[in-house]
Amino acid sequence: MSVATPIATTATSACAACFTLQADLEVPLKRCGQCKAVLYCSRDCQVGAWPAHKAECKALRTGAAQPAPPPPKASNLLGDLLEKQSRDTPPNAHLSSLPQADAIRQLIDAYRLRVEDEYSFNGEACGLYGGEDPNPGFMDYLHMAEERKILPDWWSKKKRRQVVAVANDTQGNSCIHHAVEKSDISEAYGDGMMPMVLRNLATRIYGEPVNSFANFGW
Image 1: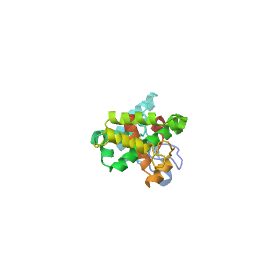
Image 2 (image 1 turned 30 degrees about the vertical axis):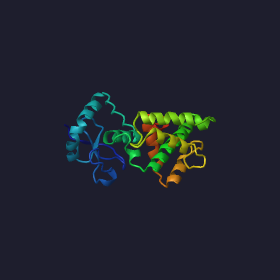
Image 3 (image 1 turned 180 degrees about the vertical axis):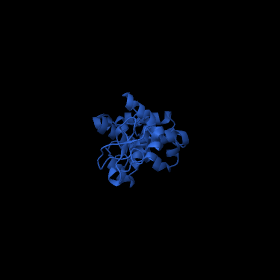
Image 4 (image 1 turned 120 degrees about the horizontal axis):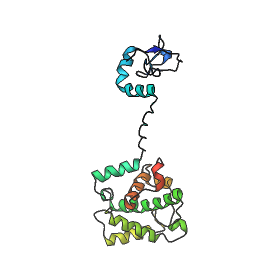
């Protein structure tokens, strides 16, 4: 390895090993004696960085292209959360942990928010948003929840009828005939995290998130 040689620098140039700025040094930065490109503030920094710089140095000398680093994995909070829950808890753990009234409310509101999200993000005007009876879509939703064993341990045909009745009570707070938005959910539950909880529940039931969520920070 050749001794580093001086190079013209600016105040914002920095050592490739310790990142000390030229403006903070009393002596000029020097470049690698082989590739003539990478800057160091001292012999010690150059020697210490050599194992990591060796391949890059050869590529710079020979003009070979450096292999592109793999792109960072896209952040997917929902996917990470679902994966962890799948490993650590049974599918119906969340609803089973709640009092029955709360579980019924969240089950219905998860559907209502899902329909809103499908309309807002994907333009899916189905059920309420298409001027149609929302019950067929809600029945399909409950069927998927049963198939995927998301529902609480106390679930039965009688409880299903009860949930459908609550969902169709136009005087109630969880009515599938009334539109709901994220802000409404946060206000109704007094919890800004509840929209994420309900979206997570709906995703487990449908088996996939609303498409836009993959790149949407919620």
